[in-house]
Length: 200
Image (cartoon, rainbow, N blue to C red; front, side, top):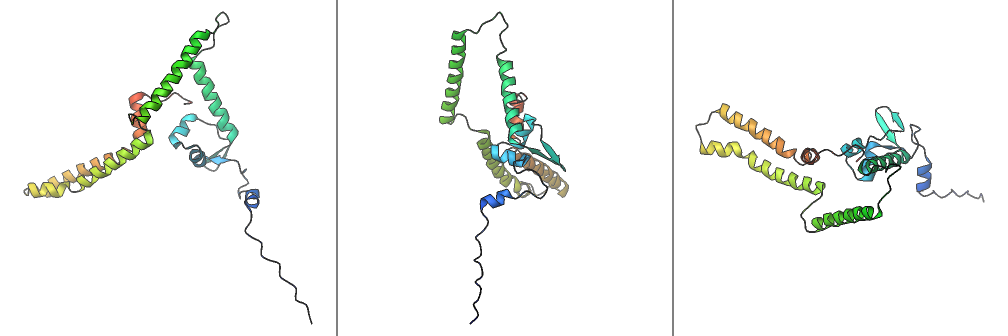
C-alpha cells in the first residue's frame, strides 16, 4: 500500500509583525507620515499644521513626509520661542524674583481653572462644537430658503420670470454663504481675536 503524503496545514493569516516588516512599495521608511496621517494622529486641522511650518524629512512626488523627530523638534522650538517672547532672559545684573515668579504661576493656574469652570457651565464651547452647531443652523436656514421663490410667487403672482430669477440667484448666494459658516469658523475666530503667533 502506497503511503500518501500529508499536505501541510495552511498557515493562518500573516501576523501583524510580518505585515509591519514589509516595506512600502516606494521604499519609504515605515515611520514616515504624510500630512493627513499627522493631522489625524494629532487631532488637528491641516490649517493648524501648516501654521507650525514643520520641515519635511522627504518629498516624494507632490507629497511631503514627516517623522516624529521633526515634529517634536518643531514643537520644542515653538515653546522655547514663546517663552523667550513672554519672559525674556534676565540680563546678567538681574535676578529672578521668586515671589514674582510664584505670583505669575498662581495667576496662570487661576486662569486655567477659570477656563475649565467656564466650559463646565457651558459658557464656552470648543470651536469644533460651534462649527457643528452653525452647520445645523445653516442647514435649517437652507431648508427655509429653498421654498422662498414659491412663497413669494404665491403672495405676489404678478412677478415676472426675470424678477423670480433674480430672487433665486440671491437665495442661492445666501445658501452658499450659510453652508460655509461651519467650515470658516477658524477664519472668523482669527479675524475677531487675531491670528495666533507663528509656532502656536
